[in-house]
Amino acid sequence: QVQLVESGGGLVQPGGSLRLSCAASGRTFSITATGWFRQAPGKEREFVCRLSWSGASYCGDSVKGRFTISSDSAKNTVFLQMNNLKYEDTAVYSCAASTTSGGNFNSWGQGTQVTVSS
Image 1 (cartoon, rainbow, N blue to C red):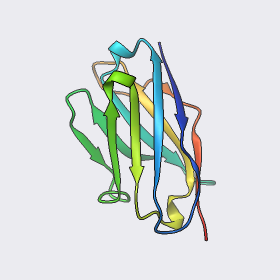
Image 2: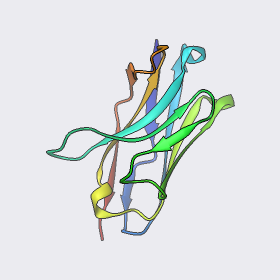
Image 3: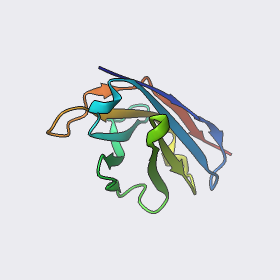
């Protein structure tokens, strides 16, 4: 079992930056991929970015070129660097981990609020 705890959310002005962190504990050796998702009020959960164990990463079209996913394996931490934030980026951001060969995410954090407002 893997436990995930996010941090780094907060209030930021449009055009600003934030870096979210996701600390993993437990059976971290079994993680095959990690990812970030977000959910805005009244909307469905949306995929943000994914990072596989091989180092390959990709992000959704809505954040491509602005958000970057990375990791510090020694610290079992995954980061989401968010630049040029927009009002529509306001959401609860959650990290997820996959311990399955199929890559489906089966561990989730509680989430951290990101609010973009002037």
